[in-house]
Length: 130
Image (cartoon, rainbow, N blue to C red; front, side, top):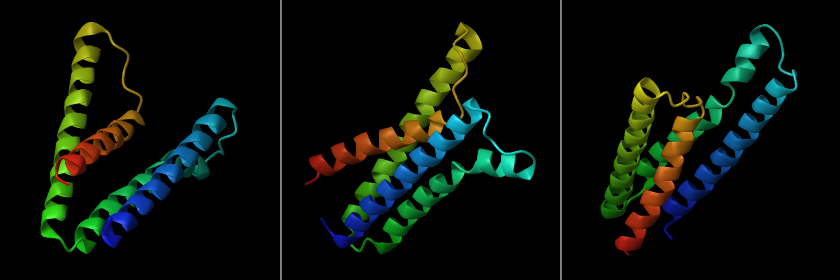
């Protein structure tokens, strides 16, 4: 595995662990009445977005570090497919919510859906093009 790809995997892993940890803390604090008041409440509620921004940075950093144009192309292709699949899933869910009384999608699901799609598509893309 090239160094740029290894760094990408490590960075994404770290940001995903941070995302789960921060989200877990915010959800647990919310359920237990442990969220702070005032301005700190807004900071706590927005905290799960910080690792998401880190993951976006990790993707952009990988694209600038990868020297092999073909590998970079494969990764961009996987990102585009993952984005499209995630948007399609969320659009179907929205239509079901609007017309079939399906409950609304929890706000933390879109990023999770995208990351799962990305993992599946990247794995398939890299396996197919080895």
